[in-house]
Image (cartoon, rainbow, N blue to C red; front, side, top):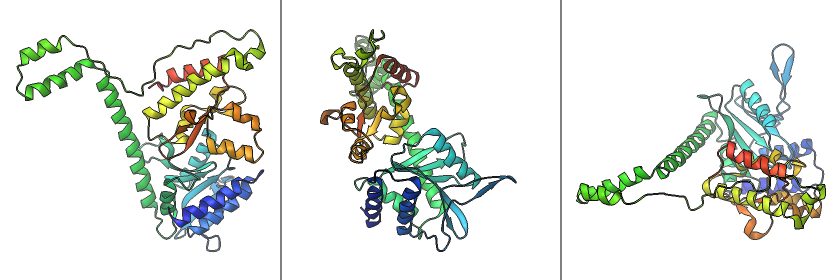
Length: 356
């Protein structure tokens, strides 16, 4: 862990602990962190509210733009530390990138995300790399290396993003190929036959034996397909909130199990991507609860007075229910589900092929 990343985490965590920090105050702390990496307002390599003219009468202003050799190299969009990046905010950052003719941008809110606007496919523009603001997140060192003023080049950061993009594409292709192979028993039987033919066994005898068996392969972490059981609307409004009615508990457990096993199926997934897979709107009202949240964000908001202590009961917080991602991020799932929202969740899982 580099000293720079430790200092940055301490600075931002201290800011995040303030009860009602504004975006402007948070931006001031982020600029202090960028100064640790060599960017300066005094020499013009870091500029706040830089104006980008669009046509003769319009303009946009990224929160921060980094400059090197007199040229803009990285736009930065900054939101409050409790902010979870949404589609509109992502599109706003991408618009800055395109106006500046840059393929990489930085989004800082609850975490730090690199956005990549793929020059080969402008329809694919998304968060490509993420570091949680935690000393335990090894991606923080990478962020520091990429953003160090002394070593920064557009070529290096674009090369890194392209490598991340290619890795994701190859990983998805691998998952697809394995699924296709495992779903076809005849293909597997042919592989078995080929193996034994190479060992000198008689083909006719092999065909005879293989005709007697069927082959089915399943991943151990595969979610058992489920059919929603709670299609009827509760007769009385309070029933949906009654612990004894079982509405929250059973439906919430189904959601928890689905998300747990989705993470097992996608071991490299990071929290922003997981949140995009299971967006907040699925929970219904209030959306502020969210389907998934980081454990740190819930605990931090409770400590800062932004959430009531009773919110502890609105998430699955037992040790065995907490989902730990590969990068160490601890994720909790909301337990507050009523019939309409649960059916929406099931529909979303089916429609987007999220069942593993």
